[in-house]
Image 1 (tube, rainbow, N blue to C red):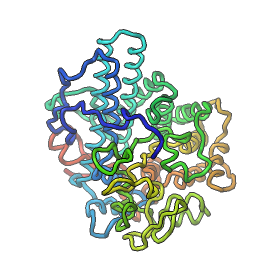
Image 2 (cartoon, rainbow, N blue to C red; image 1 turned 135 degrees about the horizontal axis):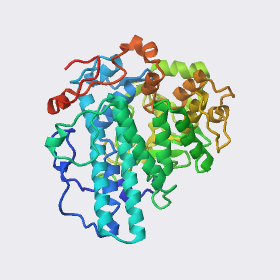
Image 3 (cartoon, rainbow, N blue to C red; image 1 turned 30 degrees about the vertical axis):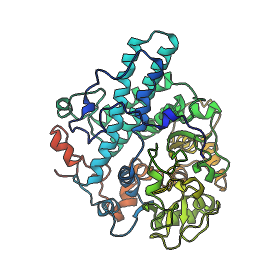
Image 4 (spheres, rainbow, N blue to C red; image 1 turned 120 degrees about the horizontal axis):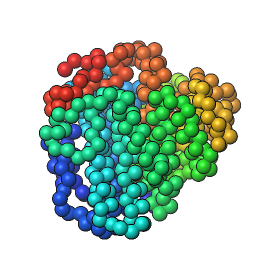
Length: 494
């Protein structure tokens, strides 16, 4: 079994009257329940936050939708699966998608579901604050409110990266209010994210020894460092990354492969993960995320098979080979017909030659009787390696902070390279860009990196990318029908 994770953190708490439908549909969770929660009991304080965590886990189709927009659209990944499977996903390989592509609408819904659950949790904390009186209970309330705001910030960071101009929903609303909400500019959304993260940084504890995997002030710092990087706010990005580095609480796993293993989930390299576990059960309800399963070898043999989506591209393989990046290649690529270091044989007759090795889970963990693969795999959102690379990039771009960690940009970059078995180099932007690609391959960063670096047209143009259009995705047609105040992303019609 995997390392112990709090049951409260894993299991969804059914606080909402029904599951979230697409954002702006008429939803029962658009209004606060008037009963059903005893706000005077301190043991209930964490329950709404647990529901917010549960909203982050991806079901089967949700995981595919997520990967289509956040990674398959990059030059590091191809659709995979069978050639005739998922024609709407193939559109992301070729930049032929439009506002009616179903996956775009679903991803909009995924992140607004997180917003809805986080808003509910924030408002629940206001009710707890009125009902409890002890100093300890009020501390818990403040921390849970900040934790919910961190989850909301994560959702909005993805929404603004994907769509740019989106509605800012910061409270529960009626369906009529939702359908008339104006869109906010990217600058307004980023300002909102900063405020949520500032509260989380100031309020959350540095660790949760009794609940591993629960988000902390360092999670908030990591996310703010990344958000600042996207805003070219170099001092803020460097400052937040430096605080994490100076804390001494985090380090790279000695082996690159261990950073993605079940055994080392929520370990010293982890800053933000989505928890998933089959709880050692063969069937029944499980707090599982299908992110790994969707990427499992297609047409493999149970328990080492999945849907086979988001496979490494030939371009990524050539890039790693050209660098002599042997260590990272061995983990990033799961090759059919090979035997893993853990002793699993990957069926040679799979539909694709390679799959994502970062979500590989040895067969001994895949205990479910059907669709078992990688359900024990936590989805890594931010790792310490990325913090080092954020710091190096911010410093190379001219950040002027005095680092408490004592690190230079060169030191941060070369710490990542050393683990990969590569020689030291200078922290120039081209070197940092290449290191991000190699270190974070298939972790949903590459497309957004190319866009923020201004390199998307150059790199992705041969694949169909159009400058001035494909930097962002269209607002789903279904959402513009529900709310005519939503302007369409430039370059798209309807």
